[in-house]
Length: 140
Image (cartoon, rainbow, N blue to C red; front, side, top):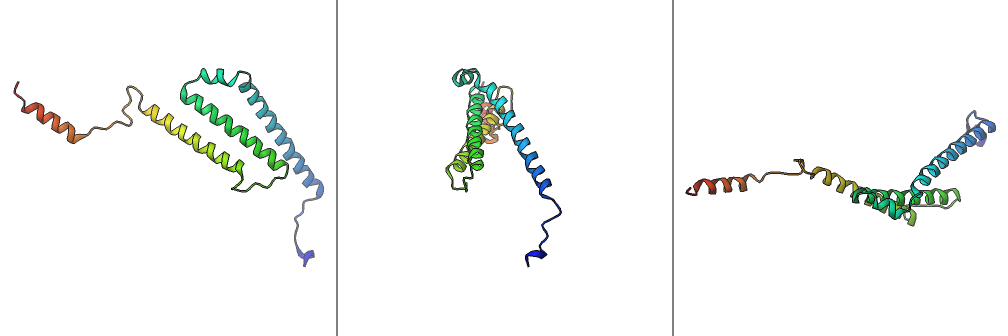
């Protein structure tokens, strides 16, 4: 029966306080996002992107795309829109995440193949042996 269910000991006032606290934290988070976006948006995107290297520029663009899509996702959720995994906004967020991962992989490869770095290099022992043997067999 319904009267046997335990709904906890929280009162309506405590639940309201929890909701208000959550809304305050949300407001603080939105304020923080606005501050950070304002810093980025002061310069034209083209100018900002040109001042960075190719990897940093790609990271900036992917981060901005993810941020804007995340904000739109949150807006839609706040408006009561039901969003499943097939929703276009979820697909777009997933696509941007994949691109960011590709950019990160490129950055790691670039860092590993920099001058003076031995990461990513290997010696073909058989080819080296053939070259040495061929050199030793030559008459000087």
